[in-house]
Amino acid sequence: MRRIAFILILVAAVVGIHACAADAPTAPKPGTGGGTSSAVSVLLFTTDANPKAGTCTLIQALVSLNGSPVPDGTSVNFSTDFGAFGQNGLPLVSIVTTNGAASTALCGPAAGGAKVKGQVTVAGKTNSGNLAISFQPGSGVLPQVSYCNPSFGPKEGGTTLTLNGIGFSGSASTTRVQFTVNGVTKDGVVSAVTSTTISVTTPGFPEFGSPSLAAAITLTVMTPSSPTPAVLSLPSCFVYGTEDTAGTPTVTAVLPASGLKSGGTRVTIIGSGFSTTGGVQVFFGAVEATVVSISYNQVVVLSPPAPFAPDKTNVTAAVTVKNIASGLLSNDDVLFSYTPDMHITAIANGTQSTDAPFSPVTIYGTGFQAPVVVTLAGVPAIVQSVSATELVVLPTLPPNCGGGSGAAVVVNITTGEKATSESGITFTYVVVPMTITGLSPQVGSAGTVVVITGSNFPLSLADAEVKFGGRIAFVTPPVTAGSLTVTVPVGSVTTNPVCTGGNVAPALQNVQTVDVTVTNRGNTCTATLPQVFTYQLPCVDPTPAPP
Image 1 (tube, helix red, strand yellow):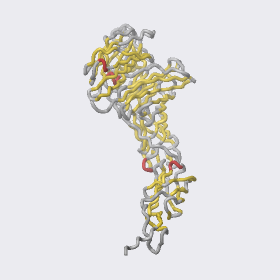
Image 2 (cartoon, rainbow, N blue to C red):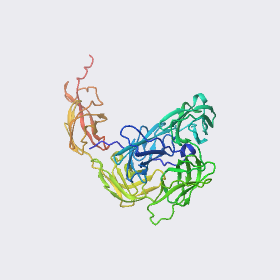
Image 3 (cartoon, one colour):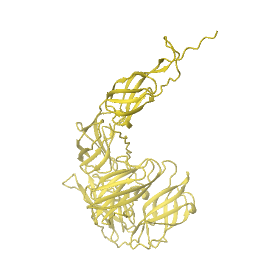
Image 4 (cartoon, rainbow, N blue to C red):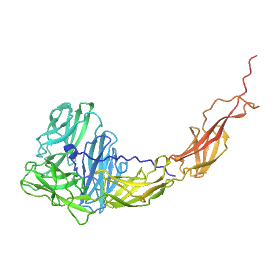
């Protein structure tokens, strides 16, 4: 048997986007270093850079090769140094791309900072992108930045920037605002702090030649409820650049990149050159969306219903932004996918034994879109890959040596949509019971070597646990499915008994009879043979009665 730790998957629908802090995805500089290629671009975005501890936040990788989206099915390997990904409860997950985008969800068990990396290899070329997430304590009055004013300024610096929000405390001397552009970090000069605003003068980045530079801001500020400062990540509140209402807007990405055909999905459009003075219009195909908020480098909208299309299973629409004052329209190469309703149509490799290593299960259907979580017969599975019509997952052990059949359930973390397989499309755990048939010898004292016979014992020494009564015995090789060799532990009775029945010291005398239990630590299965081993101790002669 094998030892597999039971995976507890954090399932949390990523909903409720809050102003700038939540609507502000980030596009950090693609990773550089040995073995990287500038032909591959990997940009990471998030719906909320400051989620509460115990929740999840949506993360999207936008991947291109020589300026064009990578082929569908390209794997993005996400990793994190804090928390776990919602699909599998692990710090590593691989998701395949659709229209150049791959999505996952990072869940934080506690307050702390997470560094997320998305790495891609395509056409023999490798690169990566990075993202900082700061999980906040789940209780108390927490600071929150709702928006930055202004949202842009010259790269020479000197802009008086106001961070508007709630829950700020402390003074200019206890507050730190750092600006990071293309991997270079500089401190701004904080001049004033109130409970709802922080004023800071931006540093300059004249060394960069680009006319538009996204700045990731890290805010360290005191809070009223804790002596420890809070650290907030503000990835897209400010851009070094100038707003040109006569210029052409540019759309880089949309987050999320898919939504329900009925519309109403809250979508953040990332780019530059959006007019905050003259306003913008946003179109999904030819259908106009409802604009919620505008800044220089992002627009938040509610998606309109999907346009009519003969192919109801694959509806996509180009997302374009029009600056109303100039009439200029953005590029139309960034797509939003209207996902069909999720359905599960079949399961391959749907019967597996808990007595052998699990193998991948393929779930067929429609409308699958990462990030998803999957359960098989009520037990969380590890998601290995996601495509529109196919999921590949790895089963995990049911608790308490459980088994039986049940439905496959897929939940989209972003939308909350749920699909359950119909009757007849099930996954089955086959549990081979463990039995104890005998013990030799059945009497003895601590240190006695005993051979336990039976069936379906653990094959790994690390997985085999044997108890005499409630005390763990020492298991020695060899370990086979039919027998275990153990050394009897000390019993709970350690006082030598008085000799009875004609026994004379130091004759062995029965003192205690106990159950023997074998447990497979790998799959938690147990077997017990009741009252099968009798402890013996040397007896002592009765104390003579006084004369």
